[in-house]
Amino acid sequence: GTFNSHQVRLDINAWLRTVPTNVDLVTDAWTLVRDPNEPMRFLYDYRGTSGYQWYGEYTNHWNQAGVNLVVNQMLSDLENQ
Image 1 (cartoon, rainbow, N blue to C red):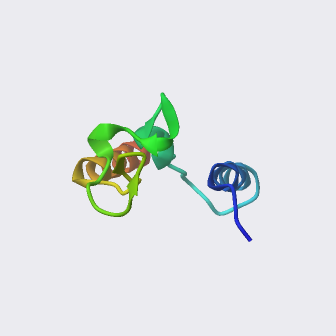
Image 2 (cartoon, rainbow, N blue to C red):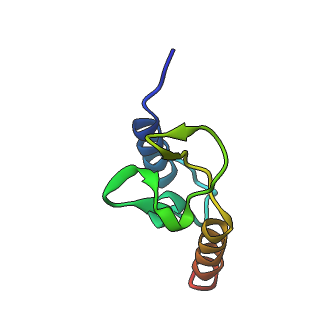
């Protein structure tokens, strides 16, 4: 079957916030890198340039700037626990 990836992501995030008892920290990487004008895509600055083309641009693969952004946010979240 096929899955609506956006709904799956929402369901996983809801589960992470409510079910696990041994999770100390969740960093929402998707919110950091997604384009608010195109919620199913990464912001251009964080979008990689490899993979299958989609609507004339490249698909959602993080580039190094995206990785750096997420890792820095995770480190900040850890420091602020």
